[in-house]
Structure formats: C-alpha cells, structure tokens
Length: 339
Image 1 (cartoon, helix red, strand yellow):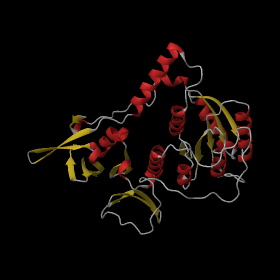
Image 2 (cartoon, one colour; image 1 turned 90 degrees about the horizontal axis):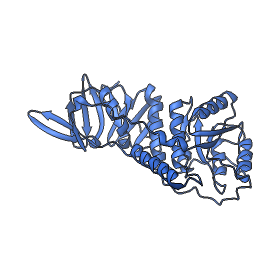
Image 3 (tube, rainbow, N blue to C red; image 1 turned 60 degrees about the vertical axis):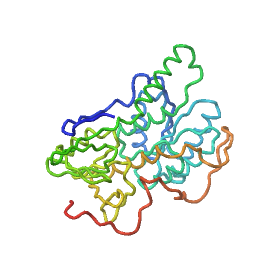
Image 4 (cartoon, rainbow, N blue to C red; image 1 turned 30 degrees about the vertical axis):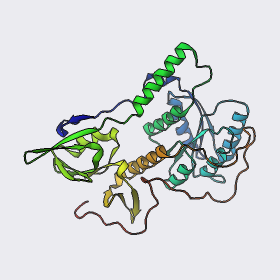
C-alpha cells in the first residue's frame, strides 16, 4: 500500500507482456462466413507475435472438418476465433460441438452481436471480441489464450527452466493488481485517508472530482481525466463525460429506449453512447475472467470423430455473476440534472 495525494496521480501502466512471452506460439483457426471480415481477422492474427499459424474456414461445417482433421492427425490447434452470425450452423452451436472433442481448443468469439455474452460465459469461452475488431482488443484475447496454453513438451533443461521461470514471474507481475492507493482528503483542517478500493465511482465537478464510497462522498482537487489515467489499470472505466466507475462495483447494465445505464448498489448512472461498447466489453471480460474453470459439461467424443451437430436454436440459459446480470424490467430513473 502506498499513500499519494490525488493532485499528483499518474498512470501506473505496465506493459501486459514482456519479452519472455515470445516462446508462446499459437496455432489458430479463424472462422467467418464473410470473406472481407475473415481476411481482416486472419491478417491481424498473423501480425501477432504469439501466433505461429493461422488457418481459415468460411462456415461452420468447414471449421468442424478442419478441427477434426487437425486433432486427428495429432497437429496442434490452440484456439478457434469464431464468428457467431453464420448461416446453417451459428457460432454458438459450433462452440458447443467443439467442446465435445477430447481435447478441445479454446474458443474466442469475434462477433458484431452483443447479445450472446451469457452463452459465451456458459461455454467457457476464452474471450468475447466485438466487431469492428480493434487490433489491441484482439491482441489481448490472443494473450489470454497464450497465458492459458501449457508449456510445450521438450521445454526442459536448465535454459528452459530459467525461461519458464522468467515467464511465470512476468505473468504473475502482469496479473497482479496495482497496489491499493490511499487518497488524502482534506476538509476543514482534518485529513482523512480513503482507499482507492473503497471508491465506487467518481463524479466530475468542474476542475474537481467527487469520490463516492459506501461511507460517503469526498471532493478532491483533481480532474476526472487525471483519475481516469491513473486508475485505468486498477479497474476503473469512463462511462460518461461526468462519471468514472469501478467495474467491480457495477451490478447491472440496461439498455432501454435507446439509453444505457449501469447500477452500482442503489445508484443508477447514465452511460453515454460513445462509451456503451467499451463498457459492455469491460463487463463481459470481467465476467469471463471470474468464471469457474470447470470444463463444459457433456460427453466427450474421440478427437478423430466429428461430433454430431445438435438441432434447434442455441439456448440462452445460465447467467453471469454480479457484473453482467439479465436486464430487469422496471425502468431506471436518471439522476436529476445529469446529461
């Protein structure tokens, strides 16, 4: 823990990966029925230093046959980057079939549809990337898969052990949350100490920011932009020109009559249109990161046998923890005077 006055906040950004991750090479399959989208996805994947091989498929049947041939021949396949909205066999159905292989590759959904996050969670997807694809967001999904990939056989010996040790150490450092910061709040000659982890959200008030916590509110001499820069790596996200929220504190997101809101306890805050995609993406990523690591249920089939497709539309069951819950039906009431 360290103490810092708010007026001097700086970003504690760390590069998410160090040079020790160059050894993590992935063999992936990209699937999309639209040729331009498939070409762009394959191009971005081939540019990533973690990716050694990219194969492509134009539909679900071709993808399943490719997976069957690859795994049956004993060749590596680490991940499938999968579109959802495809004819005949949609991406959710394909992911369910992939989960039945003896050693299924990880699935990363790459889609323009925002409404399948619950399915992605229930299928233990590695990530959920929205179109149009942002290269940095896709790179993050690739790194997530690379982090989960076991060490290759034969990576032994003193040099290999040292390399693996370095990679593990860098992974632990990258995954560790920033040290909790303590903000000095001065009022009437009294200095109070507020932990950043206690802050639910911050509200812009001119050149100042008001910090809202379960114990009360505190006005500090810093801008919301400065807080956003300094607290980004601690799980805070801008949802509106007037609000910065702790993603962990968000219990619900709702879109009604074209307006988006998030709930933090009893408080409901608006999400501006330009931030909607970023907010939904952050909540889905957090939910995926928190999911149980249990394997998807269902009887596995031999790796050399293509699973039999199931019929009927994909089920929309299950649910996400805390951060992304099914939308309630009662209307939200916006804060007075907030635009």
